[in-house]
Length: 415
Image 1 (cartoon, rainbow, N blue to C red):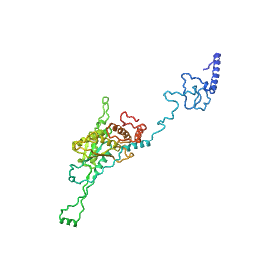
Image 2 (cartoon, rainbow, N blue to C red):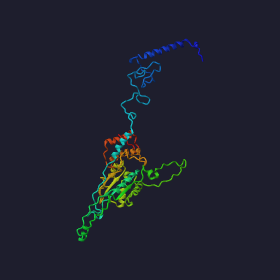
Image 3 (cartoon, rainbow, N blue to C red):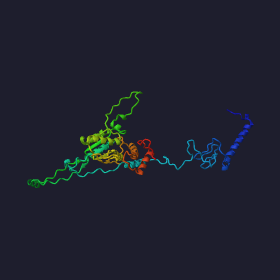
Image 4 (cartoon, helix red, strand yellow):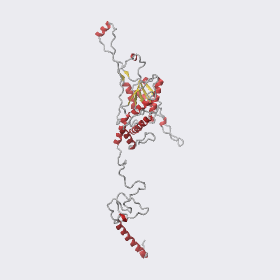
């Protein structure tokens, strides 16, 4: 559409010419203004500036090489916060995750530190020679010392194999053969001189009389045991769900015992406690079972996962009756010797994705148990043990930098 400019009043042209002159004068003079000449910006005009210079929106004149874009704000006034409340000038003293990225190597180093702390590296018990026949016990000894392998069950069946291996391969050293009797007849002695015979090999006796497995079904093992509480339920009111084939429930202890039987452990040597759902109950319910069977234990070798050694040892030392300092010896009840061991696997060897005992799960549990060792020791629930500073810091890094919070006690925060 053509516009007839001749119809415009003369005042319109004069105002337009005045505006152009005024704008050119403003752009030229703005770059020559000193700090004293700059006035307070009107309301609503943002005073912060962008981080990099750019051309003016009012002109095609190149922007100056300074780091501050043209603004009407006084130079001496600090830039205010942006709409999110963050300063417009970055604080270079604050280290963020984007500046320091956690690598898989960092995670492994921290995890290895915590893993090795949980392992107590106790030597396996050794025994002095004992009589081959219980009837040869010294006078005054009513019963032979009873030793057991106390296995705390879990989802790691390698622990069952290791416990059974220890039971089958640990023997008591035999006593030296007794000298021949001096009342033998001369004829028999001459016959022996004529035809010497080597003594028969001593009968090897196992060091442990019982292999005990303790465990019902925990949160982490329900998929292994077939615990019906592990299956997720759906709202039957919405639509009918197809019936799934039910698995026959087997406790952790029963599963571990089946491994031992398959390896040749006699059925008569296996004890099963299948009510406990945590470490404290493992100890209490096992003691009750032994009391019910009339078995007085003199020594117990605890077998656990590598990263559960320390917590198991501390719990046994506080929860087993007559080991707790608050208990007093009663009658024939004596304090029990105990130690702990686990399959000899290093951190790089231990995680097993196929069995469900994968790397992520193991790290989460290790960090949570590290915290429980500290908290439960302070509460008197287990033996109080020192945690080195580098171990605690590794646990903190796994939580804060790695995000492994899945097994932490509720409400716990590293401080």
